Length: 65
Image (tube, rainbow, N blue to C red; front, side, top):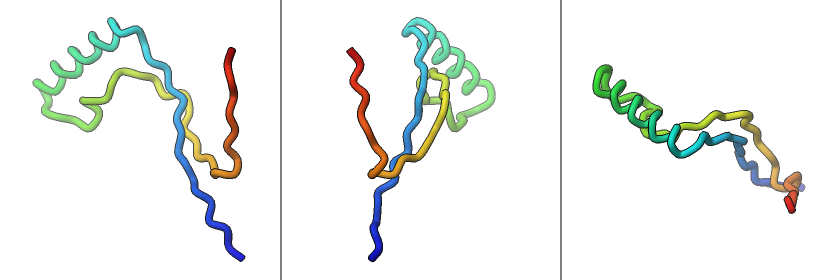
């Protein structure tokens, strides 16, 4: 018997304050004007801490109070 469990990809990211996000967007637009469009140009400013894959069976929820 084969069990087909769904795998999901997750990321833990940190977003800076909205003012910093706006400043990074301006810098990205200036860079694109000089070098042309690039892959991450439209991505909102963030720092990815870790990326991981979980199998549906292993998922659990943590409630923060």
